[in-house]
Image (cartoon, rainbow, N blue to C red; front, side, top):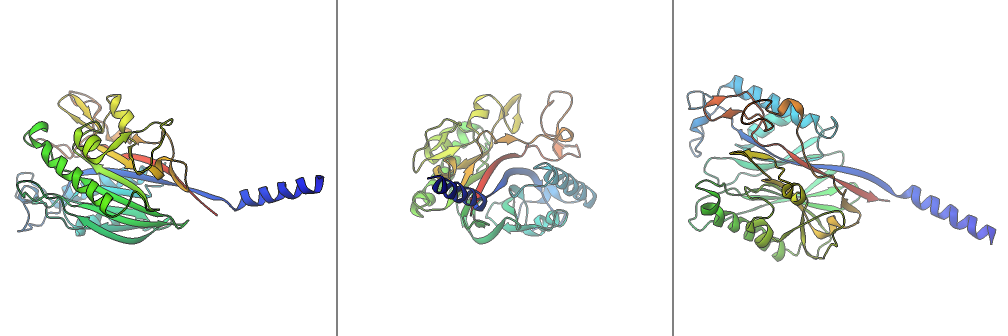
Length: 336
């Protein structure tokens, strides 16, 4: 009996030694109008030209890139994010300029969208932990056919052979008011939901992460009802084929990533599939969702005290970072 117990103990120890784990730091950030200084006749970029309304010069662009680099490289205790979804990037060339300032471990995934201003979504990922599989652009059609940003899907493979499907979103703005513009975000939500259903993401073994600037909050109908992203806490009883919004609780506590007219708005969110919310070979680390607010990025005085220092405040050039704070969450990956 004693020999049998020793054999079982030895087998257990070997099994535990064979199990490997790693963490994944996933972030989303609207980086506020990353434009180059060159006129694109097919885009409404005239404000961001040297002779435009913003007087957008090479010096201002270089400071913007340096500021973005400072924030990104400071994430994850100075290691940098493993996945970063970005919104409001004019083109692939300027995204690559930003990438040049970052660690060479990153790879860029970019897709040009039909948005009239030319502000697109893109993603960068850590090639030490992830490899590229495929990408897709999901077109959002509005009722008036006004062109808006595509939702970008990037499929990645982690070092334990799990497939991660990351959806980068920048839903239509609240221009004209939240209520008047709401149908446009409902259209985006329905488009994403339909894509998820038609491509069997619910029943697949892929792990889905939906992130971005939704221009709505977690309890707005576009996200809660039409996308179907439910609230999530550590004691949530996870249900199959349900999406879970990791940012819901912080938003309920009146915290947010974007300050507007005296109120905090949780426009930037991270939503996951049920198999990520539950204990799995890839799963969310409970309570790790947060808003990233390095001290140097925070407005210190005045009406906007506590908000992110933007590049521009109206017509005033503030030499800042972005009008949004990044958000992030941590995940654990397991393998043998």
